[in-house]
Image 1: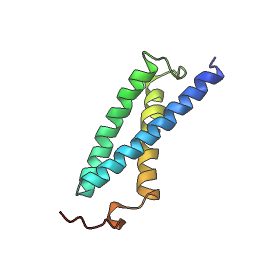
Image 2 (image 1 turned 60 degrees about the horizontal axis):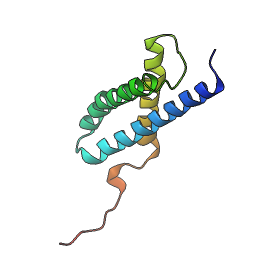
Image 3 (image 1 turned 135 degrees about the vertical axis):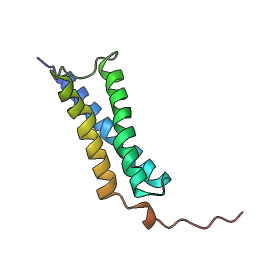
Length: 106
């Protein structure tokens, strides 16, 4: 049976993963010139980083509850936060083209 602390830590890890996915997606949108580049990096690199983070936090640190299968772990700790983070960046944050930056004179 999962304790309250384990559930809270799992929810905190999901929230941290969603924040990390949103920040990484935003970084890709700002740095890359093409929409396809952003999409490819968001689909490949973000899940890899989230998977490594999941392995680190749930392995040696023992954070979270036993979810039963590796598919459930992947869905709850990698897929859902990755999709949520990308959705937050694409839907709720202004596109990089809409920002007006000051002219820098050297």
